[in-house]
Amino acid sequence: MTDVASPSTVTFWLPGRSQAPPETPVVLDGGPPGTRLRLQASRSAGTRVRELGEGVVEVVFGTLGEPFSLTVAIPATDTVAWWRPGSAVRDATIPPSWAEPENATALRGLPLGALLAPRDATRLVYALDAGTSVTTVRAGLVEETADFAIMVTVGGSGLPGEVRLLLDTSGRPFPEAVAGAGHWLQGDAGHRDVPGAEDPVLCTWYFAHQHVTADAVLAQADHAAAMGFGTLIVDDGWQTTSHGRGYGSCGDWEISREKFPDPAGLVAELRARGLRTVWWIGTPFLGHRAEARGLGFSTLRDRPELQARVLDPRDPAARAHLIGRVEEIMVRTAADGLKLDFLEEFEDQDAPGAVAAAVGLMDELVGRLRARGIDPLIEFREPYVHPVAARFASMIRVGDCPLNALQNRIGILDLRLARPGTPIHSDPIMWAEDDGAERVAHHLINSLMGVPQVSVDLTRLTDEQSGALRFWLGVWREHRDLLLHGRLTPERPDLLYPVVRAGFGGRHFVARYAPHAIGVPPGDWTELLIANADDSAPILLNDGGDVRAHLETRDARGRLVTDGEITLAAGPHVLAVPSGGLARLRRSGPR
Picture 1: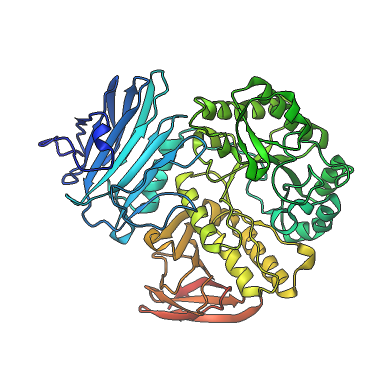
Picture 2: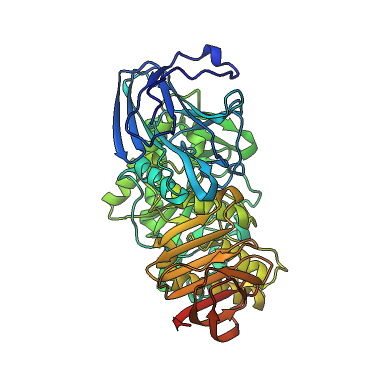
């Protein structure tokens, strides 16, 4: 994979690079010819290179406890964009090599990226595992040479360790190569498999905020059960009578008796309706108004704008208090799970070992609950998605993006690829009071390839909104296995996935988010579903072959529009699918 004939050191100008430790070439043999991939690294205790497949190698560096750096460079031939996972990541572009670096830890981000080539192929995919150490990544185009370089620095821990690097120049399709890197990165530590992690969720946050009460929750229960929700998240507000936002009440973790007079009874009533209960926890916060503030716990820093300090996870007393309070809530209310929020706040560059201690805190909390016979649903969200920490989660949610269907879609698809096998949830879907059925449907279609979370007051929906929500939740439940476990193919990551496919056997589900043509699946497909989240109704089908099919189209509320036989000729075919609607083709035979 390296140009072994000329293993010269990669050199180019960067701000402050003259102060970086020297790096020497690492020779990698046995890859596809002509890739001219080069790797160099700073001083280490040794290097092991292992070929994992055609064009895929793993390099393991023994580190000495001091800062460690490496550089990967490859000619940027036929390069389209540089992709990194995350809903808040800047749109796929080609950054310059002097662009600002990004930090990743076990509580923030994933050191994984793909250099995209035309037709959704990959020029290079990399992933890096440095445990709980801070990893700084700068990636971009070297102007002088038109090489693409990835520069990584791993912070020193003071102790010997390992840094693992994956390099894939196989040219495999983007979904396959990135998912392969994700599997490599997480190994056997993907997530905790807990029943209910793939059920739709109703969350109280966007429609109730801190005004949430037991009565408000119960008012949603029958509607939620009838629509097919499986879990209800009681979000921030159950622990305080304040309605002014902020986290000044966090840290005591006592349920407000004024708002929730019988929390265990509430959980039981929800369970009787088939709904699980998940309590929100602002995990790191010790509020300015909390009684526990007088207990002398160590903190990392003050967050006055949030009205709270951040607990130091290295403090045994602080850990014992937090774990004890959460355990007591779970046992006393017999709830089903926890939404553990703001874990990234445990990061602190001036507190060595804080990230590792926070990971240990999660391990201890899950262990304590399991010892009590509780295997809880646990929600993590972006940015703490790294498998070192997120292996304790049972589902991962897209970061906060209210009313932003595009960001939800990007986050779901990126995380589906980078964290393969883990249930990925949308940020709770919301809409404006006067939005119609089409807009509601667009939000739901943008979250089809993940587990939908919703946060609207179900008692106040218009008929249009209720109809769209019922219809699309029903479609999602009917095809859940195909959508979540079929072969996922997001097309054109450089254009933010305008068309996405899920397929298994002869069944295919296509979601369309822009006015792009859709290729009919090759071979003997049996069923093709097309969800239209674009404002244009005509959809161009290509490569249909000569087949007959039964066509059923429905609008955004699920009302039947078309029902009959059609013939797909060998050339293009125009299909009319209402915006926010669904087309269903069942193959009935050759032409």
